[in-house]
Image (cartoon, rainbow, N blue to C red; front, top):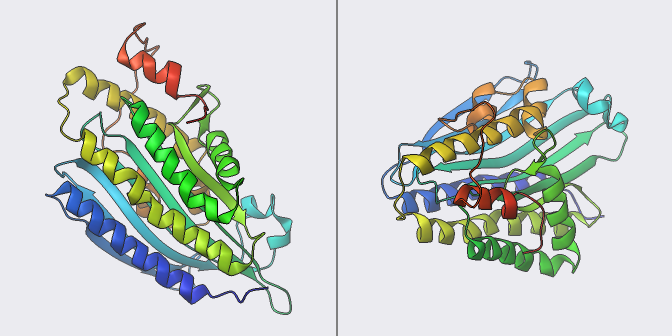
Length: 305
């Protein structure tokens, strides 16, 4: 088995946060990320720290955040050990970079990415570890060429790791980012994976690097193509309505949000993914044949791109 190098993973994640923030700032051209560095003593429920970076009121991005965190605890929360009893009684560490960007323009999609590493250790026993992550796209007024480009980049970065990796992680993304109570996907998907440890450590780590670096390669060209499209109040109100779906998923189904809150994580950093504005409307009806209807009929269901 390859040696597990936690320090190398942490160094990569911090560098990834820096790189993504720099690229997003360049594209936005006006706003800069503000950093909130935080730390908790080991004696607290969940020790560790991180760097929360938030960009607001930009030329392109209404709000977004790129977070790095590295936390540790003496034992897993009960909600986790109920599903993974082998983790009971082990100390654990979790580190990762997580980001969500909410643009002003409804023609620019919201995007999300996450790469993370988890390890649980106990003296005299082999460590239990895995990687997880992925990226996904949530358009409001989608373009098919953007969806194809997004998925083609995902497919290309997966190919060196196996011919079936893209298909497996694309399907996992479609299944994960799904709102059962709405019977629709959150967006057009991308990649999602968890519990990645069936390859040697180095190969798993290389895959995480490819996914982390692939996010801006996939997202920024779409931003550049759509950022100047004119929009009006109709498009803005629909964007805010669809952002409500984003909130519903993150608060009801997202594992990272639930784990962070249940384990005593830093609430401000965990809920950074929420949009600055969203709305709900009772029994909202979509006009047949409208651009809004196309989103529901063609994009909010799993399909091959």
